[in-house]
Length: 144
Image (tube, rainbow, N blue to C red; front, top):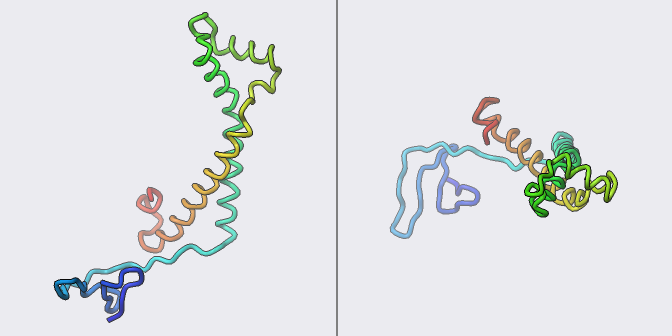
């Protein structure tokens, strides 16, 4: 019997948990299979996932930024009460600040979204690679 890594109160015998050591004594268990999970290693696939997530997040943020600026201006100024449509607000922003006005706040958005999406894509790929050997390439692996 050997201790289960990270859980010294559990004892493993041939891949199965067989006993739990507790203050009140040792509890024998029916053999419960405990899968061995390895941490993901550095890989080209992991790096590609990280980069793809960052690029996808940046691209999505750049595309939706004008919509967010118009929405924020509609909410802030009460433009809807004045009868301005979203297109009317967009025209007003372009007239006052130029096309760059539609991208106000993009750099701050990028500072948050790029690392967030990069980590998300990497974690998804690493989880899938870790769980695929245990559950196969089915719905359970993709939902994790």
